Length: 487
Image 1 (cartoon, rainbow, N blue to C red):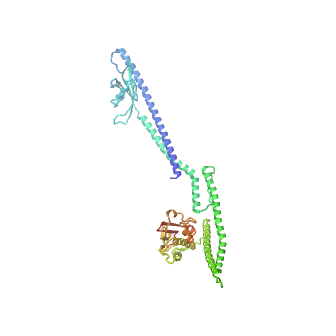
Image 2: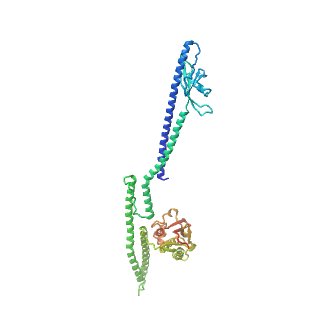
Image 3: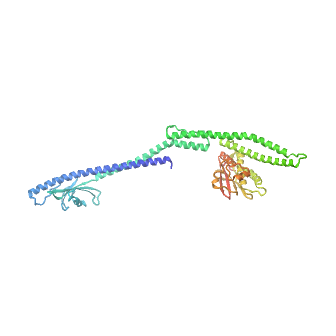
């Protein structure tokens, strides 16, 4: 999950939680306010009606005598939008307003449980098979400290419930719209805020792909945290570029400077070898012994000088590849023909390294293939891979060369039955001067630069080299090149 998406989700979730809490608070406040308002109105009306009826009852009792039964007056005068009914002390309806008709609410008698204690009772009742909810407010009728019954004010509250539901719908709709807008605006703001980071990432990726350390990050706002990060990144690139250029210049200069003295040393060694091999008249056995020893010493010097010359040439080639100055003479190359040339060279290498027993050098798949590239450089890559296979395959083993096509690529495969490579070493073998077996590399005169050079040349051809290996069972190196015109 990207940081941009994560920030948008967090921002939206935080705003959503805030809006939900706000909506719940508003809904609760509106509901409580409306409920309190209608209950206060009902309480006032019910108590006014109860006071008037109580006064009328007491007047009748004075006229008729205190021992007479109380006569409840008509309540139609008190009824308006709400209905009124009077209950006696047993909870039975004595008088009710005409607007109630035959309508009877279930559970209205339950109010008497609180009324007989002298307290008001509030209930919200919904009749069966009806969508209307009624507020039933009951107050006691008290005369001469005696509870005669109760006055019940019955008022429909559907309008209030509809208003509350409308408020709820508006809050939910507003919250949903706000969340959608917040997500869109949040994504836009996150994109703008993180755009400099994208610039840094894209610049770093471009530098990695093109190996151009001269590119720099362009961020207008240098005062922000991201701007300071970009400035720090640019300063780091400046330092890396200077160090890299210094290293390249050092390797190139040293390589150039060493080639002349090495060439001179080789020429002098060859001259000394010819002088040592010349017959000396009347030479004593001791002089002849010294001459033989000198010849052997010069031979060793020549081998090491040739090895050093090869290493210097390889270092110069790598320095050119690092600096982007590797010159490729690109032209159509018939890879199958080139592989046959390498195959013949592989047979000679096998005889040189493994002696008479040698190796079984085979040709596998031989598809015709044409690529654009430098024939000499590609030949060097294939020879490096083949020489590597020959060196690390025991005598009597097999080295197989082949060409196949796959998804727009030409695959040059070099497979051997050699000692194999450990899994943890397979990612390191293309590093410079890395050798899986240093003792055997010295024995064969290896410097650890062959595979690194091969990979650099392959990448200069927009290709790559991959390896698959099993320890003790052999390795398969594959050179991938962009496919040209197929033959």
